[in-house]
Image (cartoon, rainbow, N blue to C red; front, top):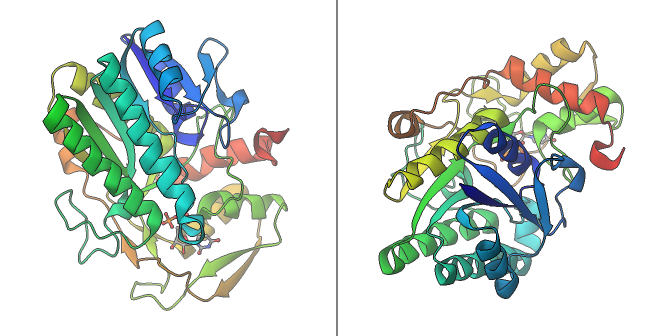
Length: 330
Ligand code: UDP
């Protein structure tokens, strides 16, 4: 079966493309406008189509020409801070872009979509671990756009018989073991890549944003999930839809929380480098604790995260960063 992977040249997309290519049932075709994705992250044996999700006629042509059976949709803008200062970009790229994709799918009879959603749809949770039926009250524009897309897909399901799986990721991290691809955002805002860039000397220090949270060591707790486990979940989700599964939402997390200080200490141990750490004020909009319940995904899809311990996450991310201090730039 042929699967179109929008945003397949991005971080999670490029790992998922490899998981699809390794599966016996699926052949991935990457569709990416390369605005933030990297051509070098697409394997040689996978076709890359440079195109935009806003371009409905071209999308329809590609869906038909490649006899696409389902779409895994990553293409989106994904910086929380930027979403607050430039909401127009997020409503345009994420909400309107996905609407165009859904229209193209509907008009060509492609019914299955696996969607890259986020824990940001929950906002500040009242308790943890977070289950899929908890209130969705996003505290930033990025999370709001992802929730709007989930609702759009729900309406397309009801009216047109499409079906979707929305995967709400917690903190995606790590890289493929051989260090050939990994996280390369510009600007980078995520904790683990920033720590590793600091260890490499590409940055002067790592800042801890807030040490007065109501947590054991005063810093935020997050649920880090290895990108290879995320990739597996996408393949299982597409298989579930192809097998006739109903539209559904899953959290993807390791179900364990680690503090910012714990991650920094672990990174010092793994890299063997004692880099500079500075304590700073809280970053606006950061909830104290975000930990997933992923019971539903394990039960329904039979998903078994195998790489999501902090040791493997940091080691594999370090493999990538060590070899590529400037990402795909060198
Ligand atoms: N964080 C930090 N320093 C940094 C970047 C992040 O202390 O330079 C903290 C951030 O406040 C949060 C955690 O690390 O508590 C994870 O942040 P990240 O941006 O990686 O993911 P988020 O949880 O915001 O999606």
